[in-house]
Every structure is written in C-alpha cells, then in structure tokens.
Image 1 (tube, helix red, strand yellow):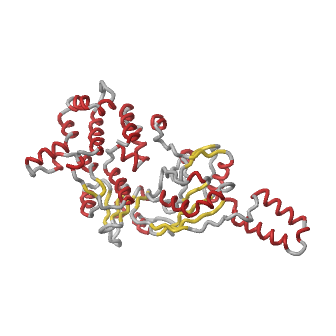
Image 2 (cartoon, one colour):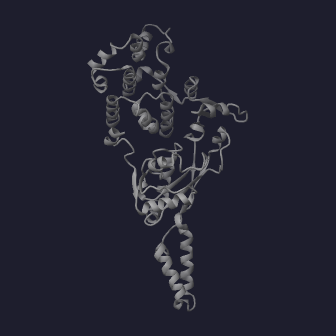
Image 3 (tube, helix red, strand yellow):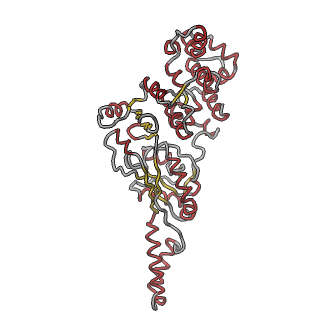
Length: 411
C-alpha cells in the first residue's frame, strides 16, 4: 500500500489518537459493552472506527453487537466531515453528517474533556433471517457520555443547591464533595451536555448484514440483492413478503434493473467516455504477461497499446475490442446479438445508473454496478474501497502506477 499512501489514496483522512484520547476511547468501548484496546496510539475515521483496533481484535466490525446493532464513537470535533472508511450501511456517512449538523456546537464542548458513544437503534435486537433487513425503516440515534457525565452534572447541581441551603455553606464535608467532583470532572454547572436523540429515515440502501445486501425499495417493486449465496438461498424460501430476490451474480438481475428504470446502457455513448477507456485498458492488462515495456506505458501510449493488442491471441484481441466490433457489425445488420460478441462482465461494466435517479440513488447504484462487474478501477476506488484495496494487492506494480494515475487525475 506504500504507493497509495504516498499518493494520499489510502485512508489519508484518518485522525491520530494518542495519550488521553486513548483512555477516553477505551471508556467508550467499555460503555458500549466492548473490550478495551491495548494500543497506545491508533487512527480513527468519521464514525470512530479504527483500522488498527480492527486488526488488533481481528474483527473489522468490532463496533457492532451483531448485524442489527451498530455503534459509533466521537472523541474529537475533527471527525466532522471525515470519511467513514468501512461503513456498515451505505447511509452511515449521512447519519454522521446529521449528528454534526444538529449537535456540532455541543460536540465541540463535550469533547474538550469527554467522549460520546453512539447507538444507532433501529428497534431490532437481533437479525434471525435474511429478509429481516426489510425491518430497516426509522433509526433512532442515541447518545451516552463516558463517566456518566450527565448524571455527574446533576449530582453537582444538587450539591450546589444543598450548599446554598440554610447554613450549609460552612459545611466542610459539602465543600470537599464539591472540590472532589470539580477536580475529577471539572465545573459542569453551565455546560450543556444534553444530546437529544435524533431520527433518521432510510430508503434504499446497502448493508453488510448477511454478507452484504442491497435493498432497493423506492422503485416499481422492492428488490433485494444478496452478495452471499447462502443468504440468498435462505431468502428465496420466504413466501410471506412480496419482493423480488436476486443473487448479485445472476445475469437476469441486470435485465430486471433495466426494466425497473434503475440502470441503462447506451453503448454508442459509452465508447466515447473515459469509463469505457478505463475498462478496455483494464481488460487488455489482464492479458499482458512478461511485457518488454511497463504496463503503465502500454496503456497510456496509443502506439504501444496497438502493438501489444496485436501481440495477444486473436480470441483475447476480440474480447478487448468486442464492444467496438459489435457496434461496427450493428451498422451493417441488426441481426447480431450483443451476448454473442461482447463478454458479459464487460457489457455489465458499461451500465450506468438511470439518468432519472437522484444523486443519492445514483451513488448506491454505482456501488451495486461496480460489485456486479468490478472493471472500472476509478469507480471501484470511489464506491467500494475495501474491494479496491484487496484487488490492488494482486496487481502488477506498473499497473498499480497506471491505476493511481487514473484516480489522482480523475481520468
């Protein structure tokens, strides 16, 4: 990952945590019912998730109590606007934005000497079967401060009232209680520590529950798409819910998404776009072995591209150029079928969210499409960083350079 880090493309916006903040983070973990970290320093993202703590615990979802009960931690106002690097839901970043929009000023004050535990409560204690994801609706975002600070504040105010009653101002015992509390927690009398619960309504979304599920319920009919084959097989046994159920690898899924005006594909338009250029060059790179030139140069230089295109076998050559070959044949006759000429994954990779969709839905469908056919390296980085990082580790060094160039220059 060294090259990605140098290019600021690998978790570059994480917030460093050390010293007193580690102690507060551990108090949050304990308050939420998790075990503490033994690390002396680490980094966190916008929702309080840490890659180092996840590695230590050998659990990427260490802030979850099962699939139905995710949590978050705020220990710094710097978390405002930061990415959520491993979101459990596609709407996690939106929920964090909602929190900071509503409680931003109080968060700034509270995190001076405390930390905030977040419970994303969807009124579901446990998931039992895959279609339980249909229960996702309204989420109540609840807050708790470490050290029970809200109660400590109430106790301080009671002590102050007691101090002011009758002749208690001369009671040294009350003096000492006030001093001890102020020394340990600070003067909380005028602090606003009340973070009222917030409400967030879901529509279509992606969740990591059950191995990864897309729930599309803002269209003609509710569609549920499973990444896990076992979860899909369990879900299709259901006879109670009137929904369409697919596994992400089913070819007919793409046709259904088109029928429901969720995605579209205009090949004549797509071949003129940077998306097509990236996908075609990715396809060629798959066939390049033991090259005399760096793959980055081959993909960037038209002469070298043509040279190596002609060096691979004819079957591979037709696969790389299949879309253009199909469009050429289509000009002469409409008898040709795209599935007979263009590789299925290549064709699927050229689909786009339907132009009528909102920006929020477009992002979700882009993520779905890149999971169906992960061939556009730029979109893979944008919409599924976890899968991008896994794929990146398998690529040849010079191809990594080309990919980093695409992402850094947004081309």
